[in-house]
Length: 115
Length: 115
Image 1 (cartoon, rainbow over the protein chains, first blue to last red):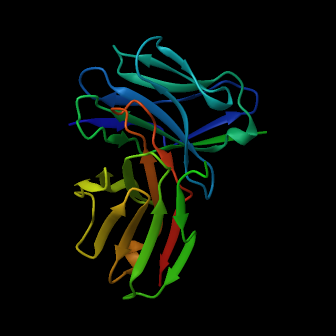
Image 2: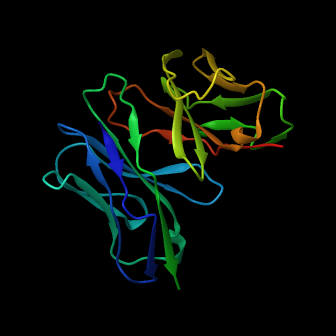
């Protein structure tokens, strides 16, 4: 079955340190991969996506993610964390062969950046 | 563009009452999604419309839930009768017609509390 795993419920990082939020997926073929962020009492906002091409993609707010096909991973990274990055982060995957193009969502990872 | 617009932002109702949530997708988008978010279950897809037609409603929890999309610019999610366990944040999202390579755009959500 197709699935997305975010193995960490919560990630704690000190401000200024690099951060990584992990995502692995189980979708055969060449999936489309997405990261979204949700700030408190807000809707989900798109951060970045991988469709094809360069495995390293850059997105909003200084975030980037690397697609690793052999490890079926799409980890979200940022070189230097800000307190304002504290939020809930969701990874999602879409199977291009799915005619409905529906997104499969991870459970979310709460990122806490401490000053 | 104003983005996906949901109303109301907050709704408090008594058990047994009918609740109607509303969504206006982004103009030109032909896919519309209703999601429910709770602490226990995370983000759940309830129903998905494509070109105003319900494609997948397997996520609708019970017959008490119904959704309509009478035209390309409006959708409703109705719960009748409502129950306390329906308390959650309900999100509407839309995406444009391009074979799944673009992201979904989320509204700010409706926080429903059933007492």
